[in-house]
Amino acid sequence: MDELVEVRRSRRARRWTLTAPWGAPPRLTVPTSFSDAEIDEVIASHRGWIERQRARQVPRLRLDPRVSEEAARRAARELVAMVAEEEARALRVEVGSVRVRDYRSQWGSCSPRGTLSFNWRLVLAPFEVLDYVVVHELCHLRVPNHSRKFWRLVETRRPNWRDQRDWLRVHGDELLAFRPAA
Ligand SMILES: [Zn+2]
Image (cartoon, rainbow, N blue to C red; front, side):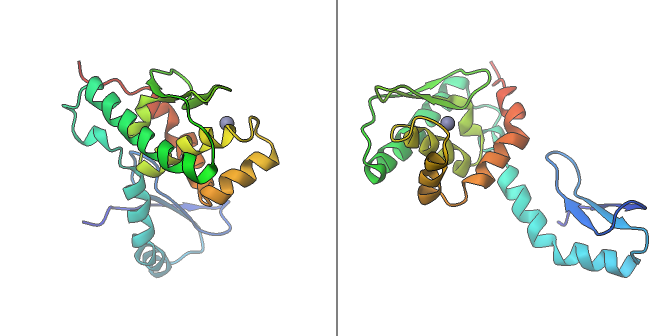
């Protein structure tokens, strides 16, 4: 079923903007001069966009509240290890060990010896987000800082990395706050 879109007419708006914030109805802001027909047209032609945003926002494990932290951690470790193994080959880097941890404010880290650690809550995010964080840390094995050279390397492996970074900026706090049912 199509989601109901909240429409707001704004005197300050010079053009329309559509957002689909997490956990809230999509909102369309339009200039006061916009007609109802124009509003309907924008909404109708952006149904696909709204659906795509929603699909990306679905946290995976939260669909099943019975999943325990242990199971979530196991799933995280498996996914992370899978991506790390594949990408290490592509990046020609040596991965020491891969761990998942209970970080309170970060997604991953990488030691000079090649130990990669990741926040298990990444398993709650869309796969592309977890995938990006793993690739990001692996790239640090080649370039330890966040220089241009680093981002160019990330870009060769994941051209859409900005989408995943943005997702984490928007939803990161929500993921970090997640506590599984005991
Ligand atoms: Zn980094």
